[in-house]
Length: 65
Image 1 (cartoon, one colour):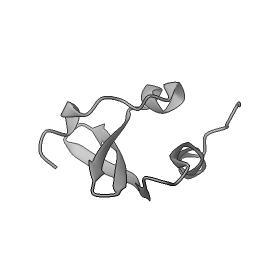
Image 2: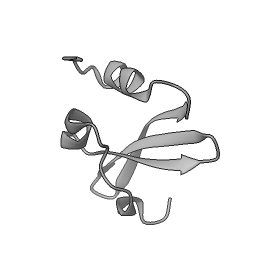
Image 3: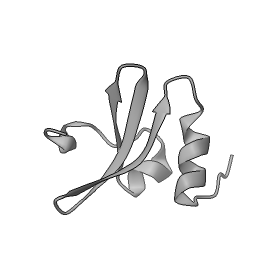
């Protein structure tokens, strides 16, 4: 991934606080975190999926809706 910091932090406040960013590839959205010089891919999800629910579950976050 070239220039991974070019993508803004996620629009969800809690995800942005932990540094989640996203990029697009065709019909998919790639969610990742940058730590030092390493990129950690969290999830790759289809555009039609409720990504917030999947990301919260993957990262062990509580949904306070």
